[in-house]
Length: 220
Image (cartoon, rainbow, N blue to C red; front, side, top):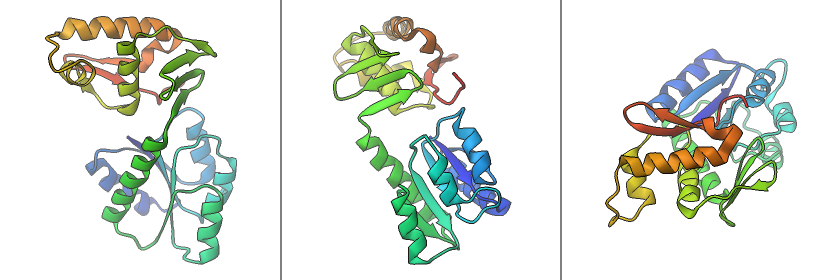
């Protein structure tokens, strides 16, 4: 899971980053909304932690400009009701005030990400679209001829993006417990899935000596 921490106070960013890493998150920092917007053009994030009062571009202006829809938690010293109402009207998912408990912030991050994942019916990365309800994947609008196992693999990768997954885990999650497969079974299906993904085949990265990782935070 990858967080984008947007705050002009370096010490605040450092505290959040330290705790987030301890909780297993990857973290990117931005000192204002303009820098954050530049990151969103080339990277995907699972959650944004956003301050309101920042130079160059404040938090509310950032919310109005951003095109991606990762969930947002505002973390601000401003406690007025109007600020909270404005934030929720602009689509934020939670609002915390400073001073704050880093542990509570991490708990809220987990809750917001969990709600977002449960609501996710469609995953999209540039021109690759995966519809979990219809069990279809497409590139540039053309449906990919995936088998059930290939679609299950792709779905599991997306649900665990940026996490290294062993071949044993894949056998356990994708194939029945009664299936006596081996690493070659996994590798063969991954090869076929990559072939179907074509220009997006590199989203599935080989983790040498372990398994695979689905990375969606690289430039197209």
